[in-house]
Amino acid sequence: MKTISLHQLSSLGDQTQAPITCHVIADNQVGYALALDVEGEHYAVVSDTGERLHFRTIEHLLDVLVDAPEVAHVARLDFSRWHPSPAYA
Image 1 (cartoon, rainbow, N blue to C red):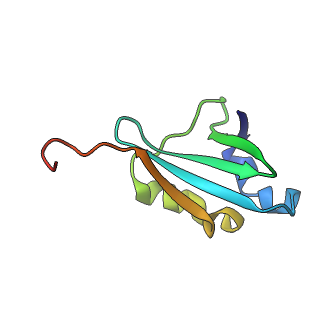
Image 2: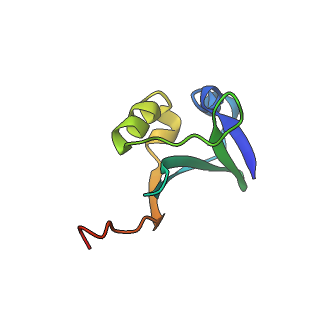
């Protein structure tokens, strides 16, 4: 899997005319992460140090997506790694 930094994410629309699909990955162990599909390539969104970014809340992640409107309007939620808390199950 390739990587893209958060700073590159905000200018991705200027770099490609291809359709971009954004996946919000919900994981109750680590929080929320972002992944992109661009021209058949899968990218993990990483920090400046190269580590995958995780957001504690969906609100924090949405605040980041606001700065990348080319990506925000096509974001999809992936709850395959989300497991209900025992208190709410």
